[in-house]
Image 1 (tube, rainbow, N blue to C red):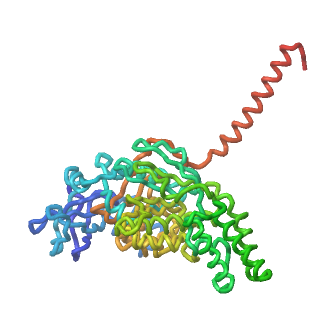
Image 2 (cartoon, one colour):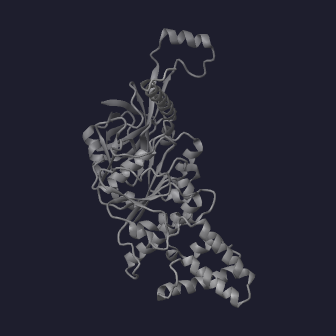
Image 3 (cartoon, helix red, strand yellow):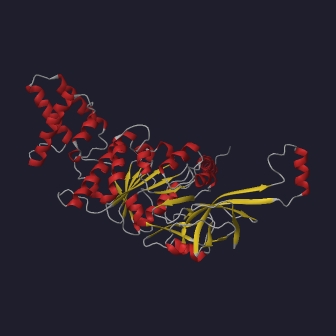
Length: 499
């Protein structure tokens, strides 16, 4: 089916066409010239009328022309060149000849485009529901992914579809679940392994514990006392001479001993007070009887760290601790030099990425997310950053996401931030984001051979990501009250009471 004819000057990256019928933005087309069959995507459409141009300022004249009817309507569009279908989508070396016909891509051509070795089934084309969209799994796992959308656009459903598809390959997925959405999910391809948000302080680094105890960066004397006690306590654990399994309490006791020996040194007492305060403040995440949290990960499971009852500071501690340990233990496994290893790759899903990796302030979680984003692919650690506020996600971390699934985004600042982090997101695609319906997304990056407009599949399991039906909630309360009053009246009537 011919949708238009190339006009004007053409280039190696795009062509302009005129049509007598209205195609759809996001549709794939083919252009045959110079022995090539080139695939393109319609990225922009304009409908106009030469007789009703913007230079006419007389309303009555415009009204008269529109009533008479004119045959000067035209449709102008722009096609982004994606590559030669018969040459592995390599970009052509010569531009299209003006006057060349542009045709809608047929189903067989599109099915070949979306045929991949390790398919992740996301959904179907928005404009051709009979064409299934598959993306390649490995580039997601090794080159990271961002799922971005405004609230209510279908983000949780998209994450669930992705996790379930990953479980089909037995990939261990680790979800930092900020709202408890995935704790009770039913994934057809795997089970949920709920992990308690607990840390054994013995597995924390000196820097992590120092931050928890709130010793300032310029508190050199306090840091020296704390470091000495930390090393002694760590040595006691390794030697098996520890008198308690509470690591922070051990450090406190060592400092208390030193304070008595040195005559209640004020700096030591200050550190003791800070340790005591930390033990109280973070008591709900410390567990001195568990092993390294990463040993809880199960292959082929959605390993869900339930952070729904944790505040932002606790989430920051847990995320930075897990990211740091995962990177170091995977390095150990790859280099084969140490006993503490993580013996398999892991795919991390970070919900509320704008909280865990904020754009305009520093945090430990942000620092380690950045490190894993830069180095993780060498050691089998994949990241998926999920956010409904892209503009507040750290730009450095976001720019390391070589794949993106972008659902509806309306706010211009969100759009600009995402575009600046992705070299493959054109302005024409950005312009489509506000008009996407719920569950529709632009998919682009290394996981897909071409930018794609996708209707994401509906997740078949159970997930909690929808808005609360508040009206029904209060309607149920009212109905329950009325039912209770009616029941009491019936009981009274049966007992012989009349009103």
